[in-house]
Image 1 (cartoon, rainbow, N blue to C red):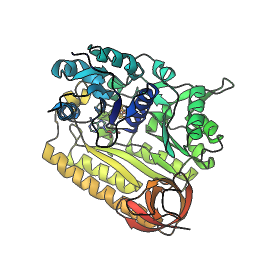
Image 2: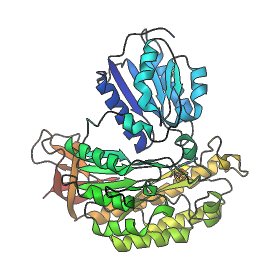
Image 3: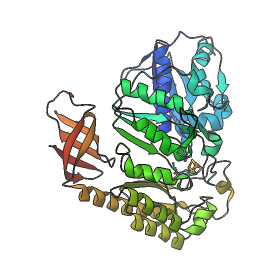
Image 4: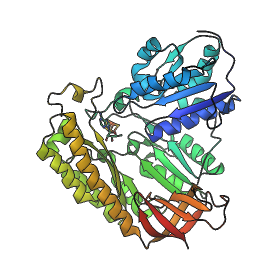
Length: 443
Ligand code: 5AD
Ligand code: SF4
């Protein structure tokens, strides 16, 4: 590779889950720290990081087409780093296939990007997909930017090995970040403007640690400690596995006012044979019982989930069970996907892969139900007066956008134009359901 000038501007493009969004923010902070500035909207950047996702189909194809667009016809193409889970899974192939890429860096190694960048400027290509336990966070510069709603990764990796899922291979074994580092980062986020923190992890409720007195605590203990930070007004977390939801966490939903009434708890399917083949370690019934306990602790809890249709061998009758569990729960919102075989996972090698047209049809039916329930949930919220955390301005003059406690998007007209209210908790009456969002009126 040729030597190039040191980059003056950068852009980080994150795909996939919130954990990638968090990682992308931390990468951006590293570049800021080095004096590289974010490229303006629409401007070509000297350095581009593609922070990729490998959870479903065509992820790597997307990466190559994005690289093509970044380099085509440009005399001075940007330095390109491929980061995230595609980098972890297919780093060597990417290096072999695309000369335009000078850095490949896995999710556990991106703190080393500044050194890799120096080498890239000198004309050397580097691949770093090491998985050192917990070295990354300590090596990152401290937080410098935050909107009213911030992400905080508390746990990474997954030991559950659901048979369809690539995460245990790309993100590695479960690690929990230490309690004191998390409390410090949360305080810092609040200092720079965060009012709400969403705790993130692939398997977030598996977090464990020791509090300041050396006592073993779980996620409920961590949430209690964070709730002590005065200016922090809202706490959320995602994503959880039903097997790690303990009594302490259920209790926390009942008695910590700052913990928002929202729970994202994927079930994936409603049929016990399918759940077993997925290695989910819960049944439809145990999942419903668990939700009942949460709802008893917090009756207004809004529920969210993830679903996969067309897992290998899923019959029509088994798919019907997924519709039944949807009806039984009444989700406020949910994500649903067609099964996608991931290289190296057990399910990819299973017989009876379901035909694409069958998956299409199942997904449509499932999404129709989930859409119906989301509308019903929003319609039932009309008339409620609640606090909305204002995150940004809307399309229209004076319009503000934010989230209700139940994670609904709410737009309303602010007291004064010009965004003076961003970061405020506004008291709003929910007046009009509009698709996936709600219109509100300032009280
Ligand atoms: N195919 C389809 N969906 C998947 N998910 C994870 N792996 C796959 C796959 N191979 C979905 C699950 C998970 C969400 C993050 O992505 O529903 O909860
Ligand atoms: Fe993947 Fe979630 Fe299952 Fe872990 S619990 S293997 S991240 S689907």
